[in-house]
Length: 212
Ligand code: DX5
Ligand code: ZN
Image (cartoon, rainbow, N blue to C red; front, side, top):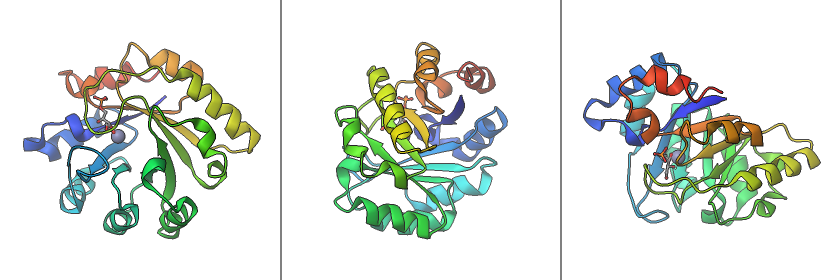
């Protein structure tokens, strides 16, 4: 299992130190949650802060957009050369156009679906993306209760096989040592975890406990 700590739960007063620490503690990606106060009822960070994160991160950035205007935010963040940019299926009218736009920047595109959005909606998209992110909470906040989405992971695996796709499966929301093994068994490649990791004093031990 690859682990992407979500810095939403970091101490923003010492954000640079937090990013350095999780990278040294074994993170595989730095998961950055971007919220616009419209698609989700919360706001987080913009390009100035993400640039500061990028400057100290020794692991690639995984940018999760929770915004209404994906195109606008892609133009803001693409110059930072993140590994992935994920956009929400629910917030976009022109899915192929937005995927192409991310790819033209030389960045791997990923699509995200909310817990109540069925996997079947990805049928026409899955072969164009490098990752599918399945939300296991409703996006907007860290520290929410995990919604069991194990069957959706299995459905997604079947869909990926049907399209001969080797794209990554990522899960985000309420991930902890209590559900990580079952997520792994269902076929998850990358686990995002915010409150679970940052509530531990020992980030190395917390990240290691997710590397099943
Ligand atoms: C929620 C964010 C998540 C969040 C995860 O909208 O996308 O990345 O930070 O936090 P936990 O792991 O605490 O649920
Ligand atoms: Zn996220």
